[in-house]
Image 1 (cartoon, rainbow, N blue to C red):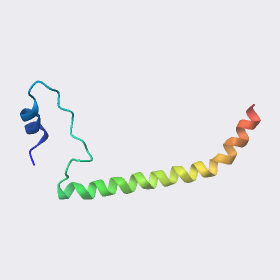
Image 2: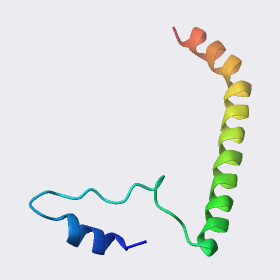
Image 3: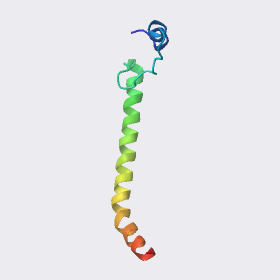
Image 4: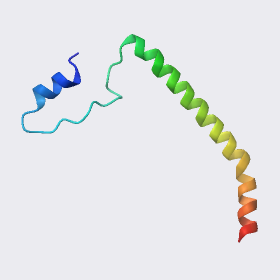
Length: 68
C-alpha cells in the first residue's frame, strides 16, 4: 500500500487531497494491538462516565430543583 505522501503526489493534479481516513487506513500488525488497548481504555472511560452519570443524575436533578 502506498504511503499517504505517495498517494498525494499521484492525485495532486489540481485538487486538494484530504488526510487519510483512519477507518480505511490499514494498520501494521504492531499498531493493531495499540489500537486495541486504546479502544479498551475508551470503552472503560465510557462505562465509568455512564455509571457516574446514572449515579449523579438524580442528585443533579434534585440540586437543580433546589436552585430554581
